[in-house]
Image (cartoon, rainbow, N blue to C red; front, side, top):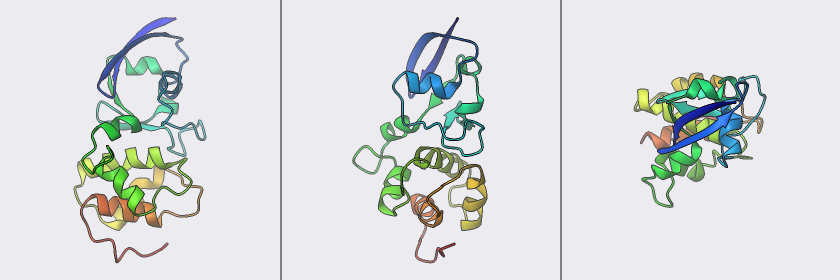
Length: 163
């Protein structure tokens, strides 16, 4: 066992972990169950969180790799809320444009969207679709997810075509 200290959603957390503990398991074991475990091979993106401001797939990162890091999960996004109901602008846009679907992939999608919008304030539809290639939605559609991300960036979504 090794002592691990990191900051999660603005709060310090110190805990003993086994060297093989994955970041996603560390987060979920501490009660942050918004980060989902999907494929466990980093292909689906359901476990996407931000580590020091960059998106990572928490199922492919050992918890010890996050020593001293600043980690933001989907729960941390709500704390940054600007759109009422303590939801972030992106979360509110997903809710308004029905980007939630079954909800399993939603936390990873929102974390990936936040990373994109941090780098590109108003991405094109093609940029959004390309950026989401590391996130899989099994509910058959990315249409409303793309609309939600465009809306979160302040763009008109009436011309987003269903694909």
